[in-house]
Length: 130
Image (cartoon, rainbow, N blue to C red; front, side, top):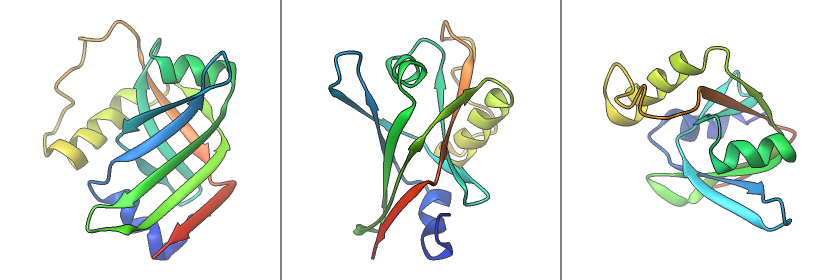
């Protein structure tokens, strides 16, 4: 589980870096919005067909690191085997838009060719600092 002492990082406007594995085995790192589910999962939202979604479908082992926006020496890092689901993904991106943009609805609905997808990363391996 993500420790209570660091869950605030995931509830703030903290940008994360998610690492996935490319088809050739090299890492692919992307900045993302992030939140959590019951301290047991880190959640990321993306669109079907994006590079990170394709990578996770092929190899679901991922890592995500999130810095405290007030103190970059304080962070939470999670590694796990991710799952993908479209269920609830539109509502999830709207919640993230509230958290990160202060708007009620994600402003780019319909602009992407693929459906929204939630990446659920179980907190199988958690490292914290600060």
